[in-house]
Amino acid sequence: MSTALDTLARPISLGKLDLSSRFVMAPMTRKRSPGGVPTAENAAYYRRRAEHGIGLIITEGALIGHPSASHEDDVPRLTPGPAEEGWRLVVGEVHAAGGRIAAQIWHLGGERRPAGTAWTPDTIKGNGFDQLLRAYAESARTAVRAGFDAVEIHAAHGYLLDEFLWPRTNHRTDRYGGSPKERAAFPADVIRAVRENIPAEMPLIVRFSQFKERDYAARIADTPGELGDILASFAEAGADVLHASQRRFWEPAFDGDPANLAGWAKRLTGLPTITVGSVGLDRDRLADLATQDYDLVALGRVLLAHPDWVELARAGRGVRYRKTDEDTYF
Image 1 (cartoon, helix red, strand yellow):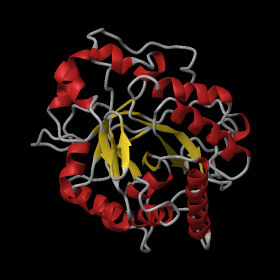
Image 2: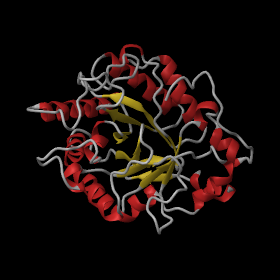
Image 3: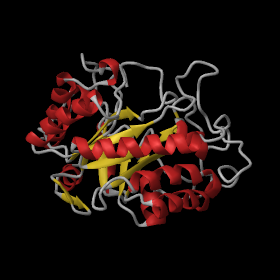
Image 4: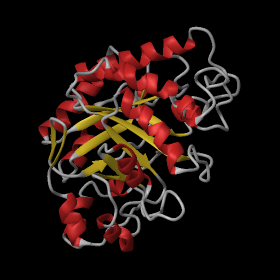
């Protein structure tokens, strides 16, 4: 186990972005941004994680500037004005601690929306696609101005872009629906729009998953070939890194092969990958971090209780997740 943790504590580069370690802070919604504006409290929260061995912090999901993105007022936006200034404060604190930080861009789609108000693959009409692409592009430009080191697009867990990928929520018969490649077409358009509005050297991460927030057995791809079609579309559109979210990182993604979802993503595309899923919640599984094929490892809940989890774990101290005052929602 110590060998795996020591290896992950070594520096790595994503293109021209140098990271102090291969540990990543996974995005976790905090619901502590009044009016969608990050505060000094948010900045201090992220800085605490940057101070203790985390190479890259990925923010909680930040909403694009479109009325359909969410109805929640305490989830941060990534839009010009006060929200941009709030994120600039967050970025400044993380950089002052020697860390690097990526902005995660988010649209909830049908999840957590009152009936009849959600924009989903089956309800978007007319120029709605152009509106969304412009909003994603504006959030990307905002991230650049705020000083972020990278951008992540949230295309996982049953939110809007993942709803396009999942045949159960995408019944379109135009170019945005049908085969796995066709279902990936709008997420790929979003990736392309973001890529065109950030510097060429800025890493663009795409987070994807099989499972949904309310359906752990869901799958966007039943075979490696179907997954390859989806991820190839992401790569061709400009994705640099794939963040493969699964509930338990040690579980195989497909029958007959031990590779997890991040391992398959790397095998299918050759791109750097991030694995995530209950890392640190089961101490006996930490040794498995050395047996898989991926580049970075993301930590979620354990960092809420223990911002210094990486240092504690490398020192051989057993630490587990426990609720804290920062664990109000994610």
